[in-house]
Length: 234
Length: 234
DNA sequence: CAGCAAAGGATTGTTAACAATCTGTGTCAA
DNA sequence: TTGACACAGATTGTTAACAATCCTTTGCTG
Image (cartoon, rainbow over all chains, first blue to last red; front, side):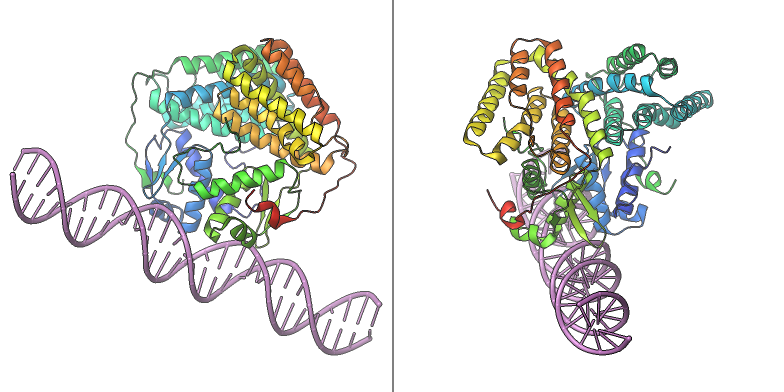
């Protein structure tokens, strides 16, 4: 149950989607901070594709708010504003509690196994102190909940929201909390296991509120990216 | 407060978005039924653009599930399956009741005016028997609710969901009910006016359930499109 | 008449080339 | 030293041309 590639397998857009997925992941891991320039030539070289496919991938990313296209100047990783942040969290609060509650009602053994496995991976990443992995898994938990719900539309929507959230946290995070708090995912999983929809919903809501509370819009900061190595095959 | 063009005004994608919007509207009005072939040359001629822009617009539409791209065969208006329908309605049921409740809590005079104006337009269209207009306005009511919520992300998401719903209804609608029932939007507006969030939420949910109930997956049908004239400037 | 194969035309996928625009650097004058 | 201007190089936007693929039409055979 991979959530890294969530496109129609019959699609003719193999290369474009591969590029999109990889950039999504790099953004989610906070390896591609806001305002990073994504030049066509870098993408062509990094992915071994022609300009057409690079441009199409950038177009897709732009339509999903991950990248901003500037006429005649190129593509940049999106740089969210405070109002973007409000919008994203609000959308998430409409969707995630309701969705998490539904997952709690309907979870099957397979879904539960996937969620449990994921939480174990989060724990392992925390023990080993692998920051990028912690961040990536932290965001992916939310997308995974949507994925195990079986609703592809919502999974895609959540991926976009979570990835945008990652940019927001990169811009406005207080530094300490660059991802979700330690045990909140585990509590959500527990509620799902217990088929406690009400609790799952409340926990999901509180969890989002905590993430939002950790933001500080009085300052922004962004680390330096090493673009070429990040986009190379991993 | 136009919902026909909901793109970033600073974007460099003017023509592409114009094409996307127009095709969105044609689909929402059920003027472009499922499986309609959208050839590049037709789009180039209809919109007066080059192949690059036509292809980019089709790519955007495909990423939003409105169009299916078939390698070496071209682009077709999406042809939803029953499981697509389930997915779309489920997503809507997660989003719309919650969103409508929020609108009821927060509605301002401007939003109320826009919604009221819209309902009046729906009534007028019904009186005059203008089927395409009825269908378009019927779908747009839902997008408008999201729009007056002020959340651009949700407005875009709803537009996609509502447009997909239009395709679903075109494929699986029982013929009689090609759009929403007559007074349900008005009841939703009333609840919003009264700031009755609970009622607004319930009505929104029931409304979606009614639309879904009117679908009949044992049969499909699609009318003939006159493609060129539909895509011309309106 | 039906079925099959081949040919021709239409359409899509891609690239190279060119035009347009922007950015960075160097020079000169105040 | 600073600001303005010109120029070169880099990058993006677009088109024409060509290759690849598919669909339709035509012709032939049984």
